Length: 193
Image (cartoon, rainbow, N blue to C red; front, side, top):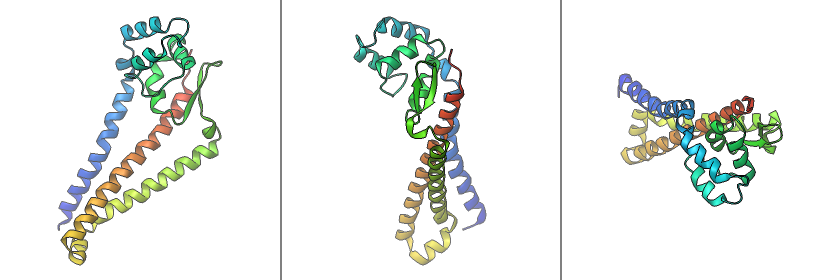
């Protein structure tokens, strides 16, 4: 197998992994254009009224298109009645593992587990190490195609390629999870007035 074929295949795999992240980033940047639908927002405010508990099930269904996180009634009221908060509802839902809301101070905060920088660093380091491990093991059978095929035969080599593909998918998912913690950190620095 020629080096050109290997490099072409690697370029294809790398672009196949990075394109979904690029699309995700573009979607997150243009989030305000998708979620700040004034008509939807006004209907949500009218439905919420003074107490979100009155129409909670309807509100949760209506918010399901905006965020996948099931919000507590007090958070629904906060997003709807705090100026500037609603435009961050989707990102808050995506980063739900890491974030909570300090309603009194009108800001996003880390969940209890991630308040200390040490815990965030441990989580990021473990995800990065798993990403590196899966990515390296995933790319090795692709790089060593000829020796693998020669020594193992066709069927074991195909199993190695399938495993390699699955490890690369796992590595991409781990990379996405690393970006979520960065998005959460960015959201915490955001001023909500």
